[in-house]
Image (cartoon, helix red, strand yellow):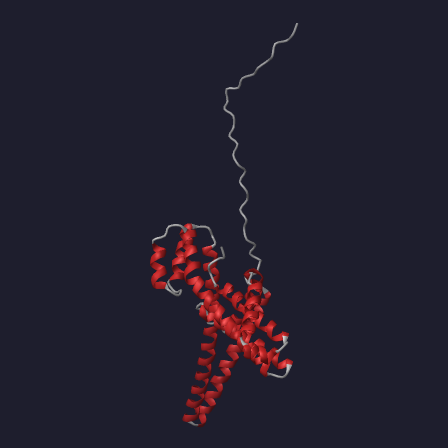
Length: 283
């Protein structure tokens, strides 16, 4: 005889499966908020500024004890020097802030968020060339892709053309300088100086007026973006055409390959710097 299946029924409801609460992560109070390097650098700055201020104040007091005009002269010299240092520091910080603003605009324009992209596009178009025409057009556009296309075809193209003109001018100057300078070491120094000046000119074209620290940052960014510009071949052709179309420079240089290489690098540098300063992402 086959036994019948046994079924047991329970009247109690089944318990709910609740997620297990994870313990809250409590930050370790023993972890220092400042790193060792930041703490040492801050201490060095406080000592340098504080001791310098105390020394100047003590020297000014001694000068006042000797004569009033000596004391006031000391105060005037110290004030003028501090004002110059403060102005230079302010310019450096303003230039670094401008570079950070370019990065934030580029991040907003490439974020994919329509609202954020449109706000960033209108923000940059307000200070770009042709703002009186491009800004009202952007306010009537609801598509972020169309807004980016307007920026690339309008102020972006105008700025790139101006950067190319600066690059061609720097290339001609480098070629003429190499032809006039007899020393290879002086040639390299002249081309390096012209390259730094070109970076500063292109940055000023985009509204960034770099100081020393910002120029170093731009050179690093230009070196990074040079491989992304995709203009090495075009720049080389433009340099060769410029040299061959100018009979005076072609006659003066002859077979000097260094001048052509320098001109090509300056053209690529101009476009790479423009790409580093342009907040609009490439298509």
